[in-house]
Image (cartoon, rainbow, N blue to C red; front, side, top):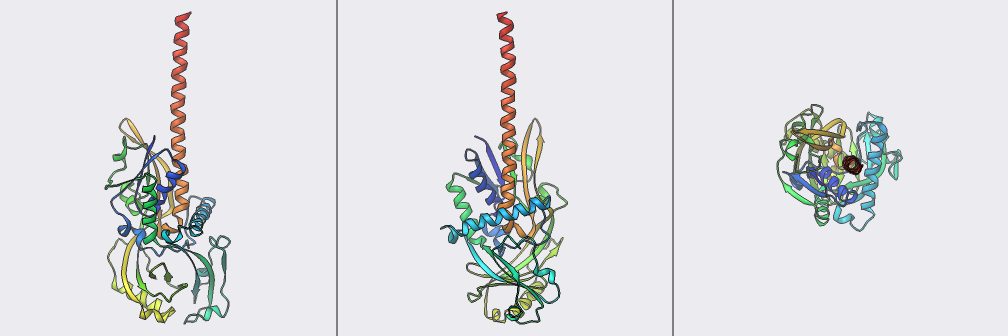
Length: 356
C-alpha cells in the first residue's frame, strides 16, 4: 500500500484528498495541515463559480479543461442529495459596468454555464446608477462554511487520516510518504521559495440579508453574493500587499459601493469582517517535482497559486494533480517490475552456467 500526504486543508487540499481516495482506492491518504475550516483562506470566500478572465494554467487548453472539470464536479454535487450538506446552490445575477464593456464579458463562462447573455435595457435599470453595460448569468455558489466540513467528513469516512502539523520543509516528508501533494496556498511561497507566488490582499463583509436572492457585480471589484446563510459584500484587491488585518478605509469603500447598487443593504446586520491574502501565481502551479533527500527521493505534485479562484477551480486542478500522482506511482511500479525482471534474468543465467 502506498502512502500519500496532502499538505493543506483548504478547499484545494481537501478536494485533492477526496479525489485521491476515489482514483487510488488502495492508497493510504493523510491530510497534513496546521489550519482547518474557519482558519483557512477558503472559509472567507464568497465561493461563486466565476473565474477571472486572466486566470491561467500552463496553456489555454489545460486552463479550459480545469474550468470544465470544476463546473461539472460542482454541478454533479448540486444535482445530488448531498447538495445541502455540501453547501452547493444555484444562483443567478448580473454584472454591471458604467464604463467598461469588457467587464461584462467572460470567455471562460460563455458556453460553459447554462445561461450567459447580455443584459436587456430594462435589466440595466434594475439597480440605481447609470449602468451602460451588463450581462446576466446563472452559476453555482459553493459555501465553504458547509463545503469544507463536508469534504472533511467524506474524507475521514473513507478512511483518510488528518494530522495537525506544521511542515516547514518538504524534505521532512521523505521516508514517511511515497508521494506528497503540495496544496499549501500562499504557504508555498516559503515552503518552495517561489518568487512567482504573490499575495493579493482582499477583504469582505458577511451580512444577514435574506431578501437578497440574486448576485450583483459592479465596477471597481464590487460584488454582492448571496450564500446559504449570509450575503458576501466585497471587495478589495491589493497586489503584492502582505497586510492581513482589517482596513477600515477599504471597508467603508466596500459598503458605499454595495449600498449604491442595493440601498436596502443598509438595513443588513454585519455578522463578520474578513481579510486575507489570496495566493496568486501566473500560471497556477500544478506540476511534478522529484526532491533528492540524502539517499532517498520524495515525489511531489504541486497544486497551488489559484489566487482568488481557489473554490472555483479546485476540482479541476485537483483532478489534474491526481493524474500526475498516478503517473508517479505507475512509474514506480514499472521501475520495480524492471528491477525484478533484470534480477530474475541474472539468476537464470547463473543457474544455466552451473548446470552446463
